[in-house]
Amino acid sequence: MTNANTLLQQAESQCLNRGVRFTPIRRRVLELIANCNGGLKAYDLLDQLSTEHAAARPPTVYRALDFLIEQGLVHRIESQNAYVACVCPEHTHGFQLLICRQCGYVEELHLDKITAELTALADKQGFKVQRQTIELQGLCAECQAA
Image 1 (cartoon, rainbow, N blue to C red):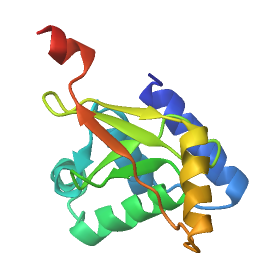
Image 2: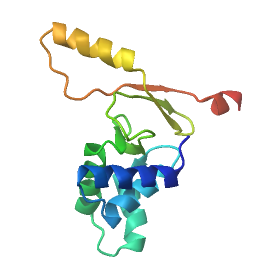
Image 3: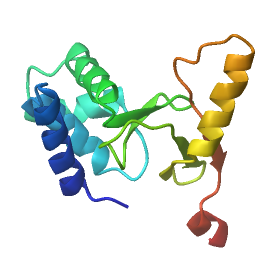
């Protein structure tokens, strides 16, 4: 698992290279998400941010999340309406998420072959994939052992 400091350094470098602003709020939102084993919901982020920034409001958090997703720094967990840090933001890629239903742990996988096969099947049907979300829910090794 990549640590939060490494992810933040990668994010700063990536934003600098792309010429986009990595504002203090965007940085803090990414930091909060990166320090969580599972996904964080927007309102959990807002609760944490509002203790640090009195002006933090829902649009502030959602704008930061939109930016982080657009830059490939964060993924949305569709089934939980939550967000998780991308473990390798330096490149564009398809991804899959393993989500523990008991403890909430989230692990990111990169099975490019699966992404390519699904895209190829969609293309054969004349369907243009704009976003692909694959979430596998179950129990992590620790929860199974408990």
